[in-house]
Length: 440
Ligand code: SF4
Ligand code: SF4
Image (tube, rainbow, N blue to C red; front, side, top):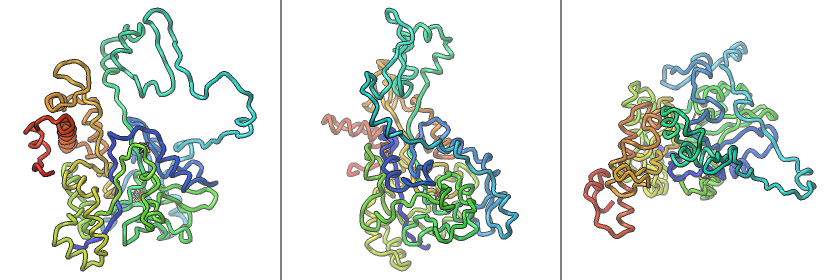
């Protein structure tokens, strides 16, 4: 066992409201410069959706996938390390600016000198058909708010004429938000892909950075990152990426995105991991074993054996204590409610997610209200609005069992907290589902 420390993050997706405050404050801090106008180190994607840059998850689009070198490190099948200029042309397809988004800014002269008008800056809701009970109303973000609701369909003559199949599809509509930063992977393919040795992973806390002096602008890291979280600055000709706000961390401050998150959904902290197990976990082929293998790389920071090994391997005692206090390991490995994004990429990402349970509809009484007690929560767990298969495609390489287990646990916790708040006696099924003792 070789114990190393890593800064990691867990995001609770049920709490994200898609306000993009994290993206904006990150941009103000890190990419508010020419050359990186299109860059969002932190972005928030609406799911289902194409992501940022668009279709970044379609790995075939970006060079035909991955292979491993003899040491198990990921590298591009058609690229990777190269020694001659001709290899440059082996760099797989890079995203174009239109795959990110076209940067724009306000014309401040017009903004400040424009005459007072009647229009509000936000689009007013519009009625496309009028008449008694026959309005179709539409406005900004209307789909997010009302898409496919039964009430909308009943009042809407156009929707009412739709086939049952279309209505059923609308009833199934769902969405949620997925904030993303660089994963600061334990097995970073951006580092393995860099021919200049400019990309590196800091030994002390695992943050992945670009040495701006060493970067030669080959952009193999851009192709090489399966999460597309390295960006090219077209003015400096260098690669740039999320730094996990290391200058702030070094003086005891959280990352900008964590500090400004409106939903308070980002848990940032140190974890300890076994560096000797990283490549083994990255080599697991069976999708059903990926999650367990990647979880097993993280070590219990309160285990005396791990603490002794950490001291032997030079991890400062303060950092071990910090890892013990951090909720990150507990959420990932103790309570097993956090999952990695696309573990099948095998870079061992270190930003994990509590998947969204979302409002649970009361299917017991059929009222359509939110189900918040244990009876309605457990009855609805197999009929959640967000398909388990979709979440499994994001977080467990398609294996639905661990996702269902997490959702059951979240439902149990929601029911437990409801009972606590109402002063109601606990339902023993809740403790059994959560798998905890009374103290926890
Ligand atoms: Fe590198 Fe991409 Fe992993 Fe970040 S997410 S460490 S850029 S491979
Ligand atoms: Fe979601 Fe927090 Fe970002 Fe708002 S600030 S979009 S709540 S992660």
